[in-house]
Image 1 (cartoon, rainbow, N blue to C red):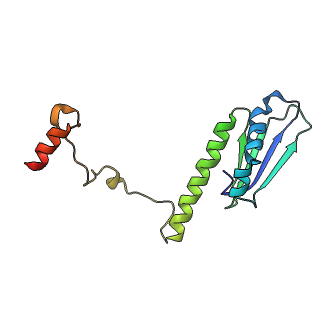
Image 2 (cartoon, rainbow, N blue to C red):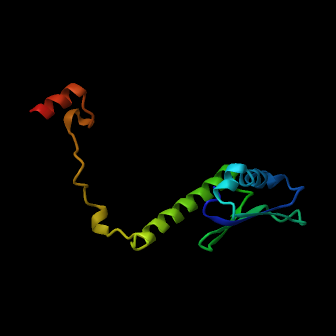
Image 3 (cartoon, one colour):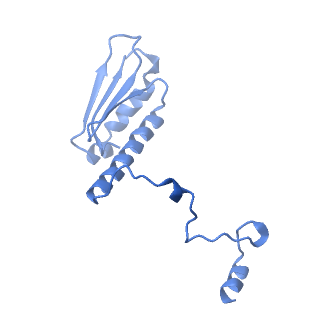
Length: 141
């Protein structure tokens, strides 16, 4: 989970009942497997003195982008999913840049609506699914 993150700052008030997602994410970030994925990642815990301040997570990715996530409205699994999704996006971007391809990839509008030449639509029985015997018959003939 920490592979593409340089820093995670988890902020909450210890007496705030809304802190559950932050505590869970903190536990996941401190897990051995997560730490091994990126030992250079800094995991910080900031205890907020003000009980009115909402719990939040500040994630800094390796490309310098900082994302602030409201931990009140977001469950821990969703926090983790958002971080992993952004990490996958960064990984894809890095692969394109290393290959010398432009990023982001822009697909021309006319190509979006073209059919893919490698696909065939079967109109047999109106469902597009062939039984093995019918498929064998069609291949032979």
